[in-house]
Image (tube, rainbow, N blue to C red):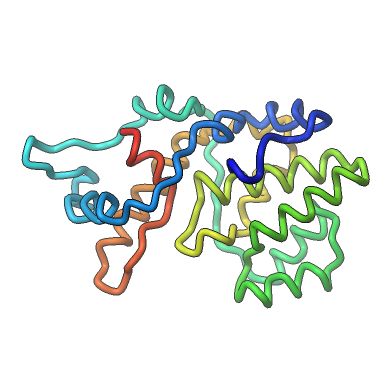
Length: 209
């Protein structure tokens, strides 16, 4: 997000209405793999807590508001994985790209994903074309893919999260903080598997907690 920067003045209001603005400035960039490995090694999925020599600790919803300044109460959006055809339809409807362009992007990403670089380019084009709603959705999907729902690739974001940006006036009503915590728990559980070598999710939560 440091590289992507703040939204253009013309869409600041739309981005602010989503309730996700705090994510623009509260993310940390780190390559400390040893620190992340230490967290995973101390994680016990049965209790969803870290077992340190000093005792058992965990990240709770009470930590989310002061750390991320995101709402922890509100509607809970169900982000179910999309079939490629459904993801194409969502991109066509909400980002107004052609079906051919949407499908070509997902072929390159090997699934219902788009590249963050693709979104960045789209954002710039939509700003120049004065398509403010589309530009805001592209910016916010990039923001979610860079923060709350970052994956192991660190360059892709799943199209399903675009569904929560359909009506930007309602996006603020989602419990984004709760979603971030659940996503981090799930990724910590996944990281315990012997076949998994990377930790996905919003690493900032671990760093600042």
